[in-house]
Length: 233
Image (cartoon, rainbow, N blue to C red; front, side, top):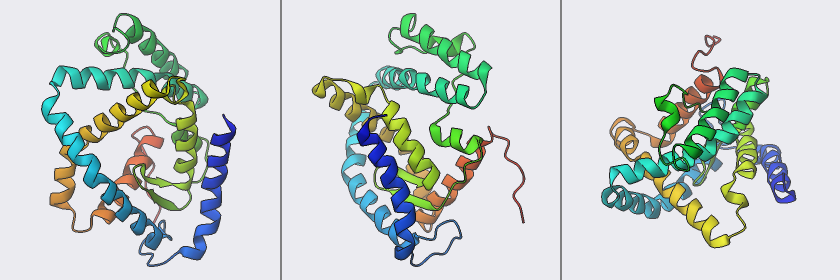
């Protein structure tokens, strides 16, 4: 990890220590900094007024096979770090499968543009460092909402920083290529969320609460591989 990444990790922990003085309007026990988080959510929504139309334009003009290829390409890069996290969690079979996916898709799949691995039975997994920390019993900490990044808790904020430091795109020396890939990935990811936007807007009286609850449920599920223990009373 670079010194800059270490500074970000320290900052994430510092936030968890400093924010108690800013805690206001808390309506959920895991969200003691709701006043701060809602302010960050408002910033996020402001940024999205620019990002969402770009994603909508991309979704409209880009042929489906091209969008699929772009998603596959970045998914293939992600398989390397997914494999590391599976191995760190002791999931050897899944970790080896992830490595196999990367090798197959990087070669036969033309640099990952075609997901050949899934067609031959090597399933796609979804693991990150926040999940790895959760697997080993690290507590989640207070809920936080970050502009662009979205909902996280303290543990997943630290996990995100580690994930970002391991991202191969971020280590490209060619600044133009690096920024282009980061931009395309962001727009492609935002476009993938467009169908969910309609569900949220139709179902949510309070969008902030809806997204917070969805985040809690999803993270609890993925950390326990889709089989979380019963909630305590």
